[in-house]
Length: 486
Picture 1 (cartoon, rainbow, N blue to C red):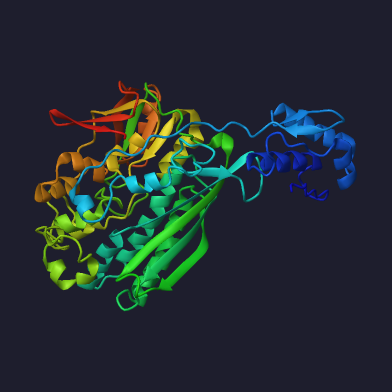
Picture 2 (tube, rainbow, N blue to C red; picture 1 turned 180 degrees about the horizontal axis):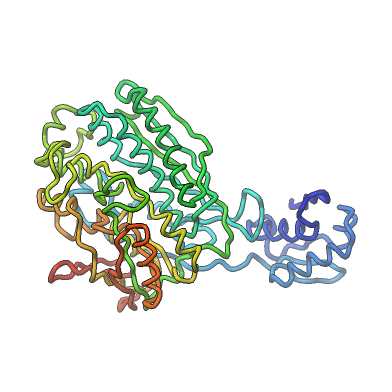
């Protein structure tokens, strides 16, 4: 049963405590629509509060459309505030591919199918699930929590250490895990006051104390660097577990949580026809990076690893692959980690292990300057260039001015003969953050990115879909690659 918990000594005035607690109870279902509330006089007597204070609070709730006055100074619940959005379209339809044959889904169709019947949160069209503020109970705030990791990229760090003796590579894996969370949070408007928890599951026989130290110190070092650039993100601790029976090498994951104002949420509902799509390059070297970035990020590494690296790794390190995979798909490439990557100043190993770039400094600067410049954000992670199909309704995404694919993607395609259509589904192909804005505001986005040393340009636009379902058209050379939401 709902009961007010009032504290006259708190900084928040008592009438606001009544408003916030009642509003939160209605939003979370603790008070059901139609339920009769205690009378104003009863509440005044129960809590030793002046009746005028209770009246003031309930008048405010009535103005919000949450309660309605009834007879004998009583009120009934009208219902929660309407939630924005509707059912978001699913990910792009996936066919059989090299990526899937290796046990990975580029579109996570199974995952989206499994969660289709679950509550989609306050803003169903948003990039991340957003809930009521269960942490403080403030109806004007909301909570967002996100978990992700560096995926199979940690296996590449393991191979690198085994072949070179250099454990410092694991610092980049810490960054990868953090960025895969942080840059998803950016897409709903979170740019600060973020709390992080990191989890390392290792096989202690293969991942030694030096590698573990680099992972732990790498997390703190990267958080400190982000704070230097104005992104308020802090460590809340974590867990390190030795699980030799569960993993042959190491798994590095993290979880980020934040509280933000509902009014500041980027809901995804503004991704609609008539916008310009600005792509922020994934390669090069940003002003806040220590080294050149190949652009690979942390998606598609299962295929990138096997398509680029030679059979030497299959023979020398059987612990780094699933023996159930077709042998014709295991380490089928021509390279070793130390070999030069064609068309690049990086070696193959350096390119594959480039720490994933965060766009947090850029997005923070844009949102601080003028939130209205950004109508939507899409992090092109799982699903690559087709990730946009999950957002908006009845939108035809047309990408006809993409940035040139970086050397690592060109090399993967050349040596593996992976169809270009699949390449765009698996990899970011040159930009990993999309900003949706008006044509007039695109210049602000481009200038902001360039001020951090990141190439950016208008890579496409949105139009109304003829089918009523989301569609994507990518111009590749003289032909078009077509994708549709299921």
